[in-house]
Length: 408
Ligand SMILES: *Cc1c(COP(=O)(O)O)cnc(C)c1O
Image: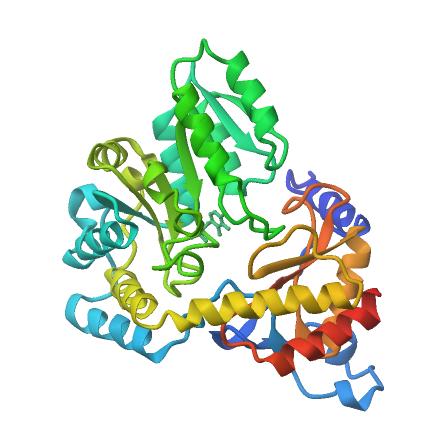
């Protein structure tokens, strides 16, 4: 009898053929923004058949890291690790239950208060991840008979939340306020309506037209959810994100964020009014039915928030670095799309060419992830450069030279 899972061999081979199969990276040691050590998975080198002596450096390879979301260089910050250790000593590791039962510790509660203070909202609520925050929040706010208006390049967790909710999904072209307005005018008969968008888009590094979205939401009586996953800690005077940068934070009633990127910890959150947070605590299923994150993750995030407050140079350095990289790419004739942030894409198109370029960069000592479908639409495969405040201008100059040689 054949094994019912046999079809997986064909399916994986098919991914291989289309240049879409992912190989897993094994990082050795800390995630340190600008540097990474990975276990070498190049089969040639493992078998010792690669004759290039420069490449025979044993199994672990040290690379300059352009593939982390550790934008403020906090993931391996010793102060954050120390806060987590202390919390483990005091409260142990596991949370042991969902937050509504016994999983919500004093550290979770304190972090929720501090996040609300940081965001300037009445309240905030923690989720096991940013993914869970989006899925849970969207599905708790709309359902059958309702409508969602979603930017076509929104993050997968938003897309999944939309699908799970059962609401009608109207996808509008990327950053296209005109098309959104048409959808809103045509959809007056829905009960609740929700507009959702990333603020900084995770693959293109460009930003949502928030002022226009706020205006449309207000004019048409729609709720507005903005996902600040890549902007928290990076933009805005206090590091709240892109909403603060363009001064609409008070006009955006539902703000989603993650503790796992700039804040170097783990978990997701939603900030907003008390009644919104009360509703989510009752009705967001990932909140109700998932175990709370270990309290030590909250302790780590609390320390990260203090660092964001006390060390604004981290975000200003990063923003300046991003401006300088974009200028250099432009000077050298390389396009970065409409990036406006520390995420700088180079669209190549064909997934196989992207994989080859990423492999060549790795040979030269740079970790730059190749991003392929389903993370980007077909034909839009790209190299994604993520900057952190730890990168030096020498590292950047060398990367730009390599990019010119490989893709120019
Ligand atoms: C990474 C990301 C998330 C998910 O956050 P996690 O905490 O990693 O689950 C949500 N939205 C966007 C836009 C993201 O880039």
